[in-house]
Length: 211
Image 1 (cartoon, rainbow, N blue to C red):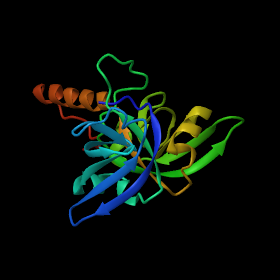
Image 2: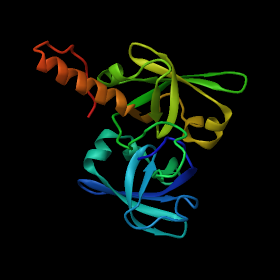
Image 3: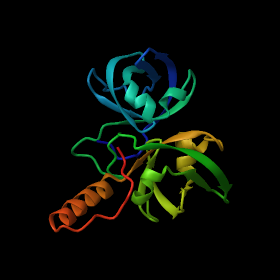
Image 4: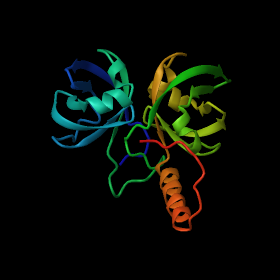
């Protein structure tokens, strides 16, 4: 589990794509200080398992399912990536509960600069719309953010200077793709309500679900 508080802006060393998988190597001196084989590190919000570590870099295998559901396949050498180690049980939960399981991919639609911040609008897949609400939480490329506006087919987040400087979101141009993970609590609530309605014989309202 993660919190969506990016620890380090890493850099892709290489992405070796095979027929049904890929092997990703990322340079991240901070997150590899105590990394070992089998540890979990989130890369742009995708939970990956370390298979090799050394010289300030780590390597992870990426399944075809992950490549299909995320924007990792678009990474190349030199690309910046958000990195976060798995949450320690005795650490503060500074963001929100983030699983590292990407629900879908959005596209940066617009960036509106402020005096010291920016409002970024991101497209929202139809299946994820029921889970995104104003003032709710969402992870964008693994960064825990508060939704400042929930629109019909998009949402907006307001990025403070720290987020702009310390994450990939300060560099994402209009048209670029980002990984999205909605609040898992919303999905559990939906499932429980649907089960209760089913037990009562009441048809559940139609709503898109995220895998």
